[in-house]
Image 1 (cartoon, rainbow, N blue to C red):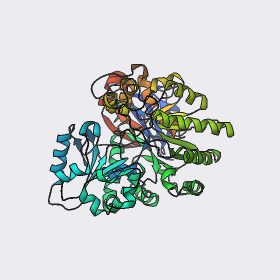
Image 2: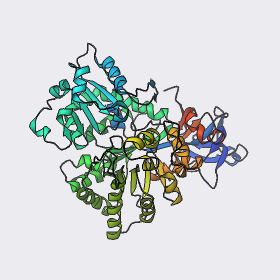
Image 3: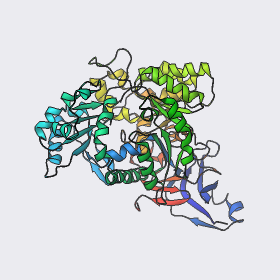
Image 4: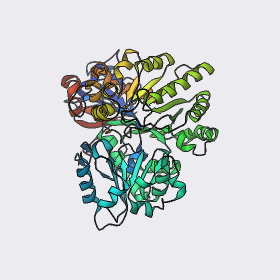
Length: 547
C-alpha cells in the first residue's frame, strides 16, 4: 500500500464550517485521509507506513484556489502579444508598466512596432478611457507601413491600420456593410470581431505562436496558486484546434492543475442550429481525462463587453447616450436556453449590464414555469451591473453568480465619470447584496480581463478599493472568510465539483495552496500582498519557483 504523507503547517484553513482548522493533513494516492493535528492522526499512522513532511511548518495551507471562469485559448492568443496597458500587470516572467495617456500609448506603440520586422504587430491592452480614441488614421500616422493590430482590453474588439486591413484583405463592400464593423475607423467589434478573427487566424493561431501562449497560460495558472480552472467557453476560435492544443500542453505530468471545460454554444452554433450543437455537446464527456474534462455545463451570452462599454444598461442609460450590444438576440438566447434547460444542463450566461441580466432572468422565469428544476445552478457570469431587485429575483429563481469583481477596481472611478455615473459605478458587482440574499457566488478573473490572481480578486471583494484608492460601495463589502470561500468551495460549487474539491476534508482530492502569510492575520487589506509558495496537487508539492 502507498505510504501516507502528513504535511504539517502553521495553520490549515479547511473552509469546512464544522471542522475549520488543523495543523496537519494526511494524504495518500492523491486523496485526503484526514485533517487534524499530529496528536489526532495516530489511528492512521499506527496502522500504515507514513512519513511526516515539515516543509510547510511555517506556512499556511488552504484548499486549492479555483478560478471557474477564464479563457485559456483567448489568453494563449493574447499572451504572445506586446502588452500596453493602463495598469501595471504582474506576470510570471515580469511586470508590464502602466501606460495611461493617449500620447504615451502612441509613443509606446511606435517604439515597439516600428522596427525592421515586416510581420504583423499585435498589441493588447488598449482602453479608450485611458488611451483616448485610437483609429485607423491615427495608427497610419505612427505606423504607416507595418501591419498593426490593436486588440482592445476587452478582447471584444480590434482596431487595425490600413496596412493590416490591406494585408488581411478586409476592404470590401460586404464587410463595410456589417453592423458591427466600422471600416473607416479600422474597428471590428463583437460579432464583427469574428470577421477579423477569421482573417487573423493564420497568425494568431499559428501552431508555434499558440503553443507559446498555452505554455504561458500554464505558468500564469500556477503562479496564481490554482489547482483547478474552468475554461468557460471552449470553441471561441476553433474547437478541435483548442482541444488538441490543450491535450498536448495541459494534459501532461508537469501540469499542476485540472481544467473543467464548458462549451461556448454561441460560437459553436455559427449557423444558428442549436439542436446540432446540443447533440455535439452531449458527446464531449467521452473525451475526458483526469486533468481535462467536460460535465453537464454549457455557456450562453446576453449582452456585450464590460470593458468596451457595450453592456446593455437600463435607464438612465449611458452618459453619452450610446447603446450597448446584444451578443445573442433575445429570441435566439431564449431558444438555446430552452433546449439546454429541458436537456438538464447547467447553464452559464455571460451578463454584464443590468438589461443583459434582466433578459437572463426573464428567460429563467419562463423555463422554471415550463419545467421546474431544483439545484439547476443557472449561473450569471460576470455580474457587472445589477439592481437590488434583480438580486432578490435571482434568489427566488435559484440562480447563482460567478462575479468579476475586478471591474470595480479598475473601472469604477473612470466609468463613474464618463460612462454610467458614480451611483451605478460604485455598485458594480453587488456581492454584499448577493450575500444578504443567500445567493451563492464565486469570484473569477475571466483572464485576461483581470489578473489570474485569486487573492487579488478576494482583496477587491473584501475591501472594494479602486485604482484611485477610494472605497466604493462599502455596503457591498464581504467578509474575508466569504471572499476566501468565493475562490475555493463556492467556486467549486459553480462548476458542480464541490464534492471533490474546494474544502479540505477526508475523501476529497489532495489539492491545496500554500501561502507564505496567514490571511486572517494580515486581514482583508493584506490579501493581495500574500506570497504564494506554490501548491500541492494530487498530494505532490509543486513549488512556483521550480516551474
